[in-house]
Image (cartoon, rainbow, N blue to C red; front, side, top):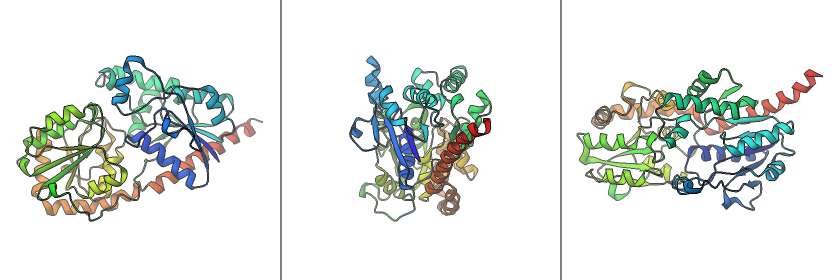
Length: 384
């Protein structure tokens, strides 16, 4: 099977969409499929199987886009024609400009098209300061549907939560609910802690430094904690709010560590921590939380109605009231003061995460693509 994967945003594996795309690409290639990747990543220029689009110039907003650590593609129809021409199926990662152009090209050529759902409305409206506007978010979902999703043959939803949210706005869709999956390297492993962390209770939180990830709530909760002086907070990620978070962290006895971790470094960092906190208000799945759980970390998760991550909680002590630092501080203190319960909860999560094994999830993705190809090939025969 020849699969063309269209990535309007791709680059360093520092965001969920890029990680999901690269996991799928690597898996399909490992299964013997030819995978062509359409993306704006200049570092892939000349690399076999990559079709590099020009980057979108947004004028005065270029600096803002770069600060977010991404580059956005602009369509080149000749390149799209080359990448899609003899493909068996086209898979779109997010419903932006290049995906829309690829969809038009694929339909003109009679190719089946599937699309991932990796972008919540709030991920877009946040940049317009309208994240909490129901009207703006509803209109964004409807625009996504009108531009792309109404025309595709299959939609990949990482969680039932986001499928329910989207279908509440647009009606039934040809959907498949498949987790993006956790890589097998994320397992509980003894590691040597950095000397500076010895004797401290290490709390890890992973995610882009952006408003919807709500790291400021965690910083305030640590400040309120009865064990504030014992806590070493690690915020793994990068993003536009880095300077703001660093300034806020100076109020703590142990200033937080802010750094981007490679996949290998993340395994080590998780295994050096004592507790994982996921304060995000907006989240489609949060593989970062599943990675932590898979390594034996007990999570404390915001109960936001706009986050799928809350469904990973196994008990009431794994949840805190969204945007409530006082409640989060109480939960942190409870886990610090109850090490036996923390160990038991960790063991419970070990079995729970097996359903999210990446090999199993990627096999389901492969089957979705195969099913879609078979279905669209069968349709003309039925009409005949």
